[in-house]
Image (cartoon, rainbow, N blue to C red; front, side, top):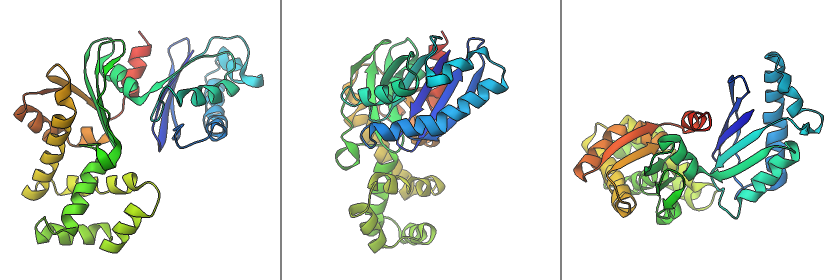
Length: 294
């Protein structure tokens, strides 16, 4: 039996695959070892994931439900593949230890969301892989491991092409009146924000990257406006020039909500810079299920 997880700071998507090949999906709150203590991660798994899995296996009449009861240690086979934001080599052991408390005899592998994206998009084939969501990241994957990675640096110093980067550019251009008056007025009307509230939430409240990324849908709604379209194209041009240009190859595979929503603009920029876009997924879980089912 296999348990596969794709985790971000907000949501974790799980898939349980039993030995008959039956697949069950569920979501829990996000798990990020940079933001959560081990006890907090344990609580998410114990109180959100575990009851759902036990109920699912009981409904299916599976003989494997013993894996998940009586202390979660029965000697039955369970493999866990966890891919998550913040799962660096230094932080990943925290997630593994939390899972081990509940799945005592399981084989557990905890890897970064970047490797999860690479495996989900490319399987065992080499390629350039990009994550474009709230943040951004990229790598060259040789079919087995990440061979090269340009540090994303976060939304203040980097994260080009991400939702937070697009939101930061949009807000800055609106507040400095670099966009047409019509767009600036629509921005304040539709977001119900003011200059003061934006400064407050960006500089004095938690998770400013999520706050700024929340403005990306405004750009999607008004993408036909030439000024907004140019802003988007420039954001993605920066992503290619400051990240993708460091890798050998011309085909780029993309995963993430921003990459999925803005496929048209990304393909236009890619073609201008001599790249082609390969696989595009909103989330990597489906690809990871295929990868671990081989």
